[in-house]
Length: 233
Image (cartoon, rainbow, N blue to C red; front, side):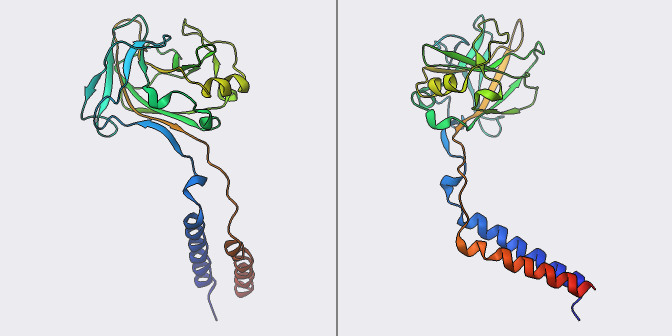
């Protein structure tokens, strides 16, 4: 007589094998794709520092080769009235494929006002949008910003305060022709030191139907479940 515990172990193994097979058959394109990224492991990668709400940055950030998350990172001090990290051309232009995806960013600061300032501002030269977050901490803090207007995107307000809600159409239009993408580097009124690492623009993942051979596993698992119930009686 097969014990219920042994049968249960077999079912768990079969389920685990099924999960492994599913992942093996899912193509890479089914998962979120990286459209642009900066890890700062070999330099500042063309990033600049300027006014957060301006189209261009004129200053070069400080590059630090170690202490990032991991590897190198860039740093901005209090150089402007409202400091901002300006993304290079790799993040600009037609990035409409990112709509519905995620904008990932990591920051670290010394101190802050504790206010929800715009973490990122983007513009197509006509319409400018912002996304506000709580400030990062003194250790590396990660943000995954959903690229959907319903996630909290607003019309840019150069005071740092909340703006009017943005529409999905506005966000899509801006993403299709990005003129600038700037990140907060001024979380405190007064002297600042803000570190930036691992900026990543990702497209949304696409659902993929399972191969027919994997779908055949479902009846088999159901059969094993029935057998297990019978053996337990």
